[in-house]
Length: 347
Image 1 (cartoon, helix red, strand yellow):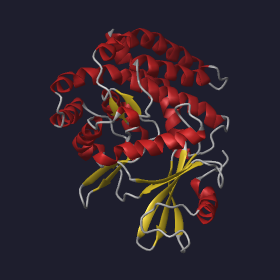
Image 2 (cartoon, rainbow, N blue to C red):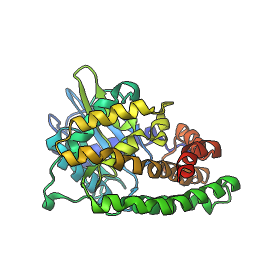
Image 3 (tube, rainbow, N blue to C red):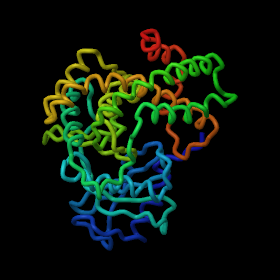
């Protein structure tokens, strides 16, 4: 694989700051000397830590969209979401947006730097659940709501998974036996998605993150704060999406070896319910979440199947060897059988 690591983009980040001289960052003077270093990268973004005296903030480059937006619209979508979330104090404060592509061929914005460590599933599940309850109950005025609406959640997820998985199903690199089982899963899911009438007839819409894996949380144990820092793919939809995505094996195993037990799930849901003001949501959230679980597993497997092919064909702009090892695990037939056989055998 070609090495397109964040380190190789460091000169572009420095050059951007020198030329663009962004405004709106507290205690930051674009004309004074500064230091930039790589902070972290995802599949579709790169983050740099900018330091100048006591000022520390994050410069974010966006390299693509997972929700079908143009690069200009994608970075604005994320920036506007952070603005909506400011009253809840659950995410970084946004500083400036630049989707002009004048200085770099990417969408750019600046936001607050939040020091801390990744979420630890074995100790942080209840706190994470309570934080999700906070932003799920945030009131968003209609005129400010730019979020894509999730109208038929299981069908929406099913169709997205189909598009992603088709890349694998059409590839000569694919394992024939796994392709057969993947088609069986989609046949099952095509029927199971009809259960979404639950959400359609009993909607409870709110801002949902959709990407609540542990690397997107920042825990500062010294001051006792929790934040969710990655808002690339938020939607206006049912809160069960975040709860389900947080707990399914395809999420917890992505960067750890942790698989949530039934007792862990019960503790998480209890913590979430303790923060809810709406009694009806308290009464229905467990069933809403249970219906989501197999579809979030399908989401994880489908994305990994697509990305596995893209990695093998050198189609990904950003490469990560650890990611490729996980992709290989998530297209392993034995692992995928362990995820879906319980659901498919139950019906």
